[in-house]
Length: 323
Ligand SMILES: Cc1cc2nc3c(=O)[nH]c(=O)nc-3n(C[C@H](O)[C@H](O)[C@H](O)COP(=O)(O)OP(=O)(O)OC[C@H]3O[C@@H](n4cnc5c(N)ncnc54)[C@H](O)[C@@H]3O)c2cc1C
Image 1 (cartoon, rainbow, N blue to C red):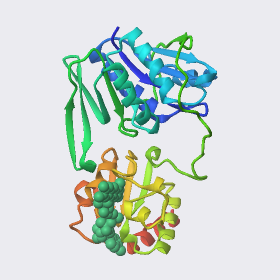
Image 2: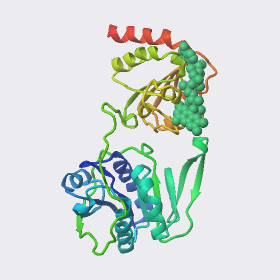
Image 3: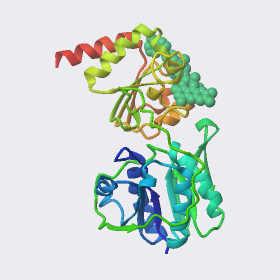
């Protein structure tokens, strides 16, 4: 009874980072809720997935069946509903990902539990969670309470929490049978289309060099790319760079791009619109270069250089090449 369910998201034999982020944070919340932390793993050939999860939860609840080879929200929903009815977790966490967006609303309808989506923080007060979520494209944060219920559902924004590298749980692995009598899914998995070769995951980078409209022309990106390469950083950008098709969408930071949490975020020619700043709230040290000393980016930057980026980048490159 009680405790927390974390629905394990995986693809091609790998546990996705969002699962590890949720497990790390849920470890803190379970102290306030009571009960165990359970990773719920539905899949096929789950051996390597179980290994990756060991130490990160009190229990891994596994249903392994070939019918679970590919994610299918209809099937997941029915199995999770049964598991929730059996174990009665107080809180079930799902990633705010394409998986989660498919699964969470229909699970909420099926269970009748309240669902808060896209949470960037949760707090447990008197046994009930309250969630922090962004609204109006990241302009405001709203604290949302759940109505009283035997169980609560929340989807968690990727990158909102750090995955805990420590594996300090004694993990029990419990295998269960695929439930009998489930209705046939009305959908059929056809194929997995891989993302473009060379795609980088900026949400996992420790050091981001981020470029904005201040770069002026597409050909000037080469200079920024070269700086990122010399610093061992990953290249990211603001939205206008993507809108102009100078960089692919997966480089974009912000409310309609990705939330990032690098140790260092170097912003070059980025004004600091709220939609952009919402994506860097988890960044460690923000360094901004902008020729306008009143640019809003300087309000969040620990270090700021009010200068032309075309003067700063060559000076930085010179220093790097000297060392
Ligand atoms: C629904 C919605 C969602 C959005 N989502 C996102 C999002 O996810 N991410 C995002 O980034 N934006 C997003 N935006 C757009 C956002 O509002 C801003 O328009 C955008 O962030 C501005 O990008 P920028 O800072 O690169 O450009 P600008 O605001 O044009 O700023 C360019 C900056 O470069 C400086 N500059 C110019 N030349 C130089 C130079 N030579 N050297 C140094 N500095 C220089 C200027 O002083 C200026 O501050 C969204 C907007 C909407 C409406």
